[in-house]
Image (cartoon, rainbow, N blue to C red; front, side, top):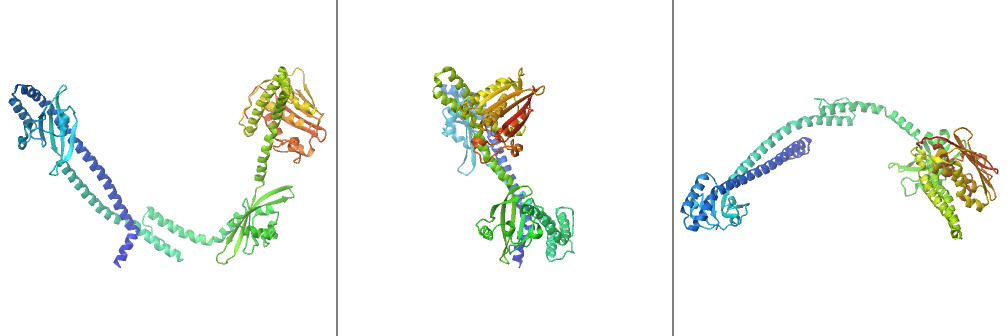
Length: 617
């Protein structure tokens, strides 16, 4: 029993809080201890090394005169006074040092040592690697090692030189055991502090966790009572902290739960209202496949009323056969769908509706009901159709310059190339048509910029008569081939006008190209320019072709609109050219209009103001 309680205690929040506190303190102390010990050890080592390096450097300065004198006197065979003086300097200056100091001559023989117990090595040769390196003039020679008795020591050897000549070396070997003993004592202090901190943390964790888990246990008991249907008791609130706020929130939740149970029916009615007013149509059936819910949008799409629809089979409401319905429900897709077309007599409009079916299964009854969503995708279908027509319209707009280029190139190939004057004219026209075709493609791709008022009309001074003559010249080959006469009439003394030449050329090309297409062989086209009002230019393109039916005149400037959809594109066009022309004329601040009668021809007139301002679209 005690073991079970102990196990349950470790599964409680109180035990988890205590463990978290202890682990946090333990990790923090370990991190701090490791960082502190590493830093302190590094500091002590660096200080130890720097101290003994300074000591060795100082000693080299003291012994340098003695070694120099010793070197000179050794040549004369008398070095006793020098050695005695050297021993006296080493013993007096470094008597209190814990390190052993040796002074070595240029041949590696020990001249003096600071350790009284090691006086026997005086006169012997020191063959250590560091000594040999120092006698060779290498300044930095130090090494840490562990002696045979287990004591960690450091060797530092500094050369004693007079100029470039090495007269000997100073050899220091010092024990590092005191440094490591100090570090061990510090580690013991850290371990003791960590254990004390852990003990205090456990006591504090027990006290703090009890203040948290006590109210939680009270809330748990009250939650059990609520699950059993008892709402009268309340959780005691002992403070204003998060636990107290949780108790207040729980008491408030119980009150709200009472209200929620009483408002359940009202919420169902709200849900029904939301379903009824959805933008998409929605139909729900019962397990027998009969309609039990139909919202307002579904009734609008299907053109039915609720009274005559509820209780009817779903296939009958949608106007599909039972076989089709069964095939959809038996399909592999979890949410099958189909496209249906509905006609509205009032608007004379055909709606494209995507019908999606979702089956809801009941595990207890083993039956299924169906939810149907009706989405009006008419606009999306129109957009897709417009996208397809856009490709055809681009081809239509590019056909005229390509045909002109091909015609002139064929003429050059047929012999016009032999006539320099005519060949130059043909090449010039071909080059102009190529450049215009490039500009035309750019303009078509920038049609969206014209609509979004982001383009800029770049005006330049233009002679109207010259502009119209160039238009006629560009189409001269096609006109001759079709035997269509063209007349250009320009009002006398016509002033030059500021306009975007490239864009107005595009307008005129569209109008003349359409006039040629819809004018039979042997017909005529007239291009007129006049000023009906001061500071206004009026340009018209008139043909005696097949004309446009009256019912289509209101829609002729719509994009992608064609008068006769059964007519071939080579004859009927796509309507994009007039739409582009209208946008360009509007960008210049002008207007465009079309007059036509079936079988009598068509006249397109646009007006442009005389202005010097650049218009930002």
